[in-house]
Every structure is written in structure tokens, then in C-alpha cells.
Image (cartoon, rainbow, N blue to C red):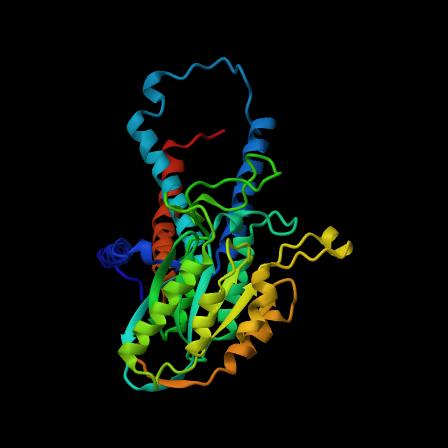
Length: 383
């Protein structure tokens, strides 16, 4: 049964109100690649159409026909606007379809109760200037490679109930969020975190002055930054472990780990800090963004940073991102940590909202297509 015009207007108003009430700052997109591909195809089709219309003569048209059209028969400004409205509706509908194709969604939390078996960990991410430099002739930054490795590791750890806190460090450490048990929420925190925190984004020595590998929106400018101080960062996370232990009790946080994602280009070797971690039964692991020059490797020149050479002396280990099996071994190493019981208070839920954009697009098409026919009949050009 067809709906009436008033019912359709009410439906369209409800969808627009729902879309207008969406907090777009909280929207994330699950498949931007598909939307980008469709957008590129659409742009290419429009460019080809414009080229065809500008380079070829219209059928049934002749220049200098000898007829002059009186001004009163020409399309006026109001008619011109009305003639363009259906095209605007079509453009908005296509834009909404592209957004819907990118799988937009929101995250929300729900309160739950109960205890779960968990492994406690702090992820300490190096966001110093050297992470903005190129990774092994790939035209990609070390930070981008590091982030992809970190996210891949988190994908492997899904449903393992890790209780994790995210920290970044350059000259100073910054806690992004306290310990959370929520895989989904934590994954998006890592995804959205900046690649580098620097005083000024400078190119790698010996390279072109204007050559950068990090997008501007992934750079956080902080005037106090400029070095890679892992000592200060490890001292901060050690204090955070102690504070967490004081709140929850020794029996809950007896077996812990710190996962350091870095290119190991640090200012000093943190021996005392690693020793302090060992005393607290906190095992350090490093996901090593290996940028060793292949020519040095062929010449048998040791370019392994001291941090990597000595990490095992403190009961830890490192995992080289250039080794395909490294993340699997890192997963297994974390999994060997003894699980402890902690209380689960909330978890994140993924709420898809593509239907909001899809319904608005369909509504605009329902209005725009008939309006386009009417506009062509009234104000269009005929042979």
C-alpha cells in the first residue's frame, strides 16, 4: 500500500532529524576503501562526461541559426534555481550513498557485572620525531608501520580479556586512557591516537627538506617535545602500575607486562627502570620497528640498538616487525602471562548507522528524480 504525501514528509523529517542528531565527532567508518573507490569511479565518470560534452558537438544543434530568443522567453533567475534544485538533491543523495557505503558506526557502552580472567598490560607507544621518518624505502612512516603492527596485535588479542592502558611517549609520557577491559573501545583508542608528538615536524637528516611521511592530522604539536626519553616514560608507567596495585590489591595485579612499540632510537639505556620493572614482576616486551639499512647488514655491521640487544637481560623479549612471525610470538608471550581475576564493569558495542544515510539518500532520490523530469519539461532545452 502506497503511503500518502503527508506520511512521506513525516518519514523524511524523522530521518533528517535522526541524521542531524548524530554526533559526527564520534562516528567511525569500517570500510572507507569501498567508499573511496566508488567516489573515484563517480568522479571519473563525471570528468569523462564533461570532456565528451565539451569536445563533441550536440546532436540536432546548429550554430548561428539566425534566431534570437527574446528575453521574456529566457530562463529567469527563479526558474534557474528551481531547475538546479533536482540536481542538488541528486548530488546530496549520491553523497549520502557514499557515506553509507563506508559502513559508518558509533560505539556505545553498556553496564555489565561479573568477574573475568584477564592479563594486565600497558602499551607504551613511541611517538617521537624519528617515528615520523621513512621506514625502509617504503614511502611510509615508521609510525604508520608501527600502528599497523599494534592494531594487528590487538586483533589477535580479541576476546582474551586483556586489561590494558595506552600510553605515548616522546620527551615526556602521556597517558591516553587508564586500564580498560574493553577490546572494541581500546582498539579505537589506538586507531585514533596521533602518530607523532613533536615540537616541529622535521625531515630525516640527509633527505629532502620537504619530504614527510605523516599526514598533518596524525601529528600533535607540543612545544616541550623533541627527544626520545624512554627513561621518563618507563618511570611513569611503573608509577601507574604501583597506583593500580594499590587500588586493586597485590593479588589482582601480580603478573603484568609492558609492551613498547618503538624504533629503539632512544636517548639512553633504561637499565635502572628495567630493573625496577623486574622487581615488580612486570615483563618488558618490545615490538621493534627495525629500520636497519640492508647495506649495513650485507657488510656485517651491527646496527642493533642497545635497547634491543639488552632487553632479554631483564627477562623481556623483542619482536621484529620485519619478521612475519614476530606478532604471533608476541601474542604467545603475552598469553603465557598468568591470568588474574578482575571485575568487568562495561563493554563497548558497535552500533551501525549506515541506514540513516541510506534512507535519507533514497528519500532524496524519490523526490529528486520526479522533480528532475518536471524541471526538464518546464525549463529544459529541447531540439
